[in-house]
Image (cartoon, rainbow, N blue to C red):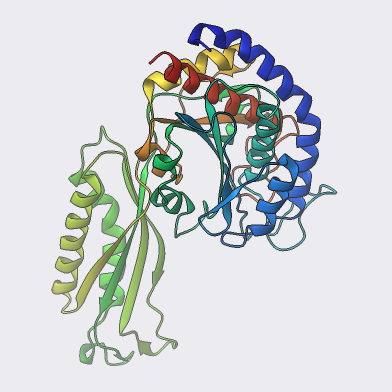
Length: 395
């Protein structure tokens, strides 16, 4: 097939996909009702395998992948995330989860949509091979996407492009945002430990207090970010935990702890921040006669959308009847960034927002994308595949 033939192929592919949506919506409800948290996704994986009728290979312990179409040559990967969150659901629907876990990030929708794409793809002669990847552990470390990248699948399957799609309530229903460049930040954690000498609350001069320096370090962190990095490149460090508990009102604590998330969008900014934060902590601690140490834990890299792939994908999104939204960028993180670090990729954000639910965000116990979201995500995934296929057929 030539690149110029893809438009007519796309119409047929979309037609086959539309016929799969009803069953996929029922699959979504089953997945939603029976969520499995990170690292325990095997049952979810088996549900998808049974639904698609494909033979899958295991990857990243509880994940799986398959290849549809040509057995050799270049391929396009589409990812679907398997895991749920440890959240007690409060949506009130009859198919709500009751096991203390919840698909509060839309992974049930993504998986059902990918299931529809797989079933449609099996009914047509694909111009380029498709490699669907069922990814575990998107919501926690160790990252399932990193394990998949390390597995060698991109090289073994000759994956040239990767597509991800994620529902998002900040965008209106019917719209999809691609947008070239950085769309999600690199993520990391910084852990401060402050050590002094405990003592009696009535005799603070006999101790080496860690309460004041711990508080001062936490309060100074935003100022360090502001004065260290170029403000034209978004970055932040947000404190999520600060512990200085001695166990008693009249006991001065011996140790303190601060844990924060770090988000950066430019290469080397994280390294610069870590150095500045370490100097800050040591300086404040020294002034109080205590000791502070910083531990840096690297997470996901920056998620970067490939410009040329975005352009091709947008053409097919319009053909599918979806509205293009302005690029959506945030300091959120997604481990699909490990895919985008391996091959040119696009993460597309699929709108689920309306005037009734835009205040209910991802990871909220009330988050429940509309039923038609399965169709829109499936069309988005298919459009990504078609855009990548055009790049491969007419590089």
